[in-house]
Length: 369
Figure 1 (spheres, rainbow, N blue to C red):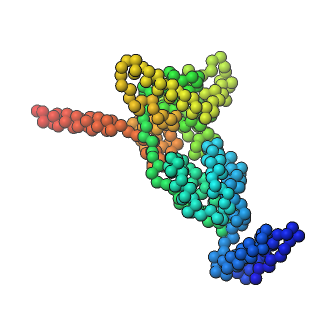
Figure 2: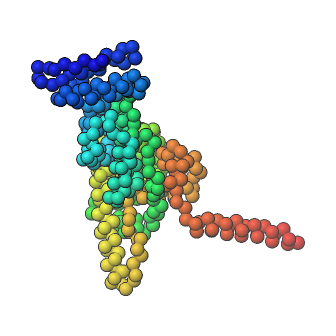
Figure 3: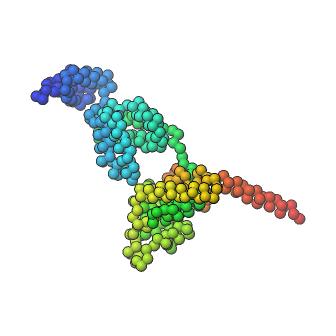
């Protein structure tokens, strides 16, 4: 039987000893005696049925507290710490965040997902939040010694996340660069579409990582998403852009640790790109109205800086094989690379036509005397 004693503070302390069941001594304090008795009956019943789990404090820590602890101890280790922080902030504002970890169920999480869908959140955004929830519960279970805690976000991901297939035309790139108010964005855009480097990699690129004579950039693991060193070949166009950026009247040693893009931060690239898209689209619409031309609905519309990486992968795929391209762009699986490769059907048709023409020419030469 559980022992219930009244403390000097007027609360009720419950002590449960069930060592013969392999259960450690359990202690919990309640404001009301009726709650203490109810908890004692519940726990003793679970122990005797073999259903009790050692949640190690998960019945006292709320989801909001767990998210805060996770953000303090784990998030700083992640490359996408800033973006992850935004999602954690949103999760902490949910009503479910006030629930203790042990009471958060799979049904609760599913209901949360349904509400996010009704509110118009993208599937990709919801899946990112589910990934964070899964990581928080795993961290609590493994690192915070809440071994009996179940993970309500286990294997819970929404299907139907749309994969972007947006190609960026040369005309759009020119318009964006011409309308940008940033001294660094035009160079960032041109290098990105030629090399498939990520926004974060470009912002951290130093001249010491670039070999213009060998036409290659060596990205150290500290700045790549996968944490692995990667060599990126430089096209003649990217070499031209880099030579224009090269500081004048400075020695090689002075230039070595200088940022290529003047120390611009990743979020600043995104903001400058967004301004350039709006400005160039507005100019395009004005030019169309002036000349009486019907504007194309997708020209300079719905563009993100990351679309440049998609475009670069599709262009480089015409030159390099699958495994070579994976090494260049830093993808660890062919499946991931295929999400970035968006070929034009017209290119396939042209290749088929060329093959047919070669075959026809060969047959003609065979029948000639």
